[in-house]
Amino acid sequence: MYALLILDMQVGLVHGPEKPWRGEALIDTLNGLMANAREAGAPIFLARHFGPVGSPIEPGSPLTALIEELKLNGEEVIFEKTRPNAFAQTSLAAQLRDRGCEGVVITGMKTQYCVDSTTRAARDAGFETVLIADGHTTSDTPLLDAGAVVAHHNATLAGPFCRLVEAKDWAF
Image 1 (cartoon, one colour):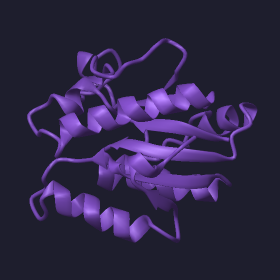
Image 2 (image 1 turned 180 degrees about the horizontal axis):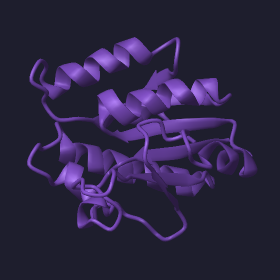
Image 3 (image 1 turned 30 degrees about the horizontal axis):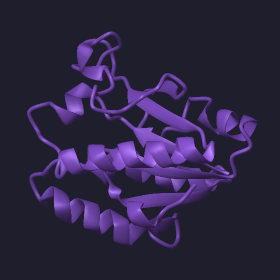
């Protein structure tokens, strides 16, 4: 069984000053993936990233709240992380194993940080790993526009670190 993992779809990232590339389309994609996961009885995990005290995303900041556009039903596992890799210093791997998950489907934000780190770590943690090609995003950087960042990471991660799949082609 595969679990759906949604990374850092938080108010400060999605609705902050640096708008994510294809943000509205991503939200629709994630809601569709959650509906598919629920229908198949697959668990859904959502990570919330917290920064140090004094940062805009310190614990308790309204910027760390999950966005309201996600269609949550209260059965999801929501966990906190402080590192880009969602497996680092969290119980994610143990919770996945406790639910009988052999694989994880990775989505969310930001492509070059948490999505990349978590995708690489998932395989090392022993999980079959799927990255949804159109299921993650970021904002423009000083060197690359967000679309190029996403395309680069899809090409780099596919094969050695994950299976790359379009959302429309994935079934739990």
